[in-house]
Length: 182
Image (tube, rainbow, N blue to C red; front, side, top):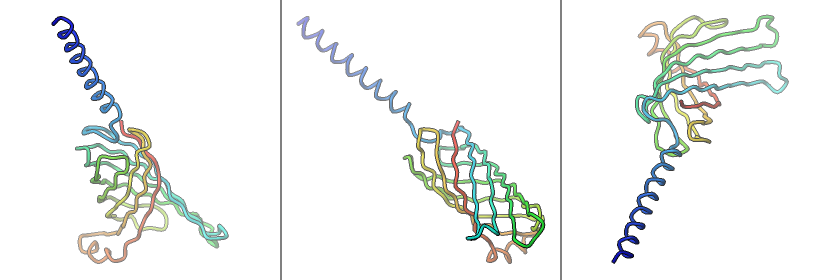
C-alpha cells in the first residue's frame, strides 16, 4: 500500500507540475496586447512616376493605449513631402489626429477597423479639419512586435456642413510599417 500511495502522489505531483508549466508557457507566448498596454508604431508611404520626376513620401507615428485587448485609442502624427517637376517649391504638410481602432481575433493576424479626427496643415493645403475611416491588418511576428498595413479614407472640412459636402471628394492614404506593444 505504501508503494501505491507513493505512486499516486508522484502521479499527482507530476500532473500538477505539467499543468502549471503548460499554463506558464501559454502565458509567456500570448500574442498581442493586453488591456492597459501601450502601442508605438512607425509607418511609411511613398510614390513616384516612372521617371522619378514627381515623387512623394510620408511618415506616420502612432502612440496609443489599449482599453481592452481589441480596442486601441491614440494619437497619430503624419508628415508628408512632395517634389513636383516644374515647380521650384517643395511641398511639406502634416496632420495630427486622434484615432480609435477595433481589432478582431486573438491570433497572429489581426484585422482592424477604425476612425480618425484631427487637422491637416502645411504647404499646398488649406489648414483645415480632417476625418476618416480606416481598415488594416496587423501581423504579430513576435508576441509584442508586429508589421501592419493600413488604408484610410480621408476627407477635409471647415465646418459640419462642409463635412457632408466633402465626404464624396475624399482621398485614400495607404501606409505600411511596424510597431510594438509594451
